[in-house]
Image (cartoon, rainbow, N blue to C red; front, side, top):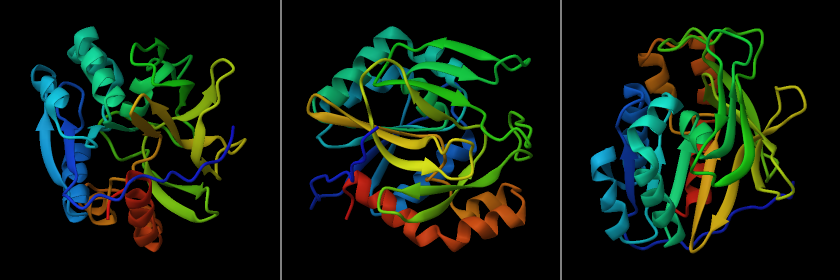
Length: 253
């Protein structure tokens, strides 16, 4: 996979960020997404499966965030009509940003906790990325739905060579599906094989970025949610470069 440092137009107006809050969306992840983007000076708006049409009339570029949560309820709630709206939004100049479940959702296919009671496997209709999104990634840590028991600080390396500690809880890495490469923005350094953690593709006039880790979750938010203090401390040490990295790849001043 080739390396690319994403360069987007720096906007003078306030970036508008639509955040999906329908079935499957984690309340914690949605709350943190609102807080983080608001702190960057962005305007935020919650959006649901029956209001996705607003994406088609939104000024571009704007961002549509699929947050952490559960991928299968996303599929069931949004349906193929919603998928078509999201594709048109991106092709006409919008930015798709998927964290964790939102990353699984935008891949070609999903392999989650194979050979366990939580197994999820199959193709996804959005297919922004010609990759398999697979997880979870740390065999020594048991993932538990709706719990911080399996949360940790993943150490990722950006294309610039910078190391960042980012909240992780059940997310994915990516491997190619077919012959088309994607652009890698970050790699896991603490997962066997150092697989991609954040990837980027161009679609029409727009673009899509998916991340197996949660750049949107702050150390303060993690602490309030009951995440182990040692994880929070690790996140805190690189929180400033993490925010700068997010702004850079999304073109936010």
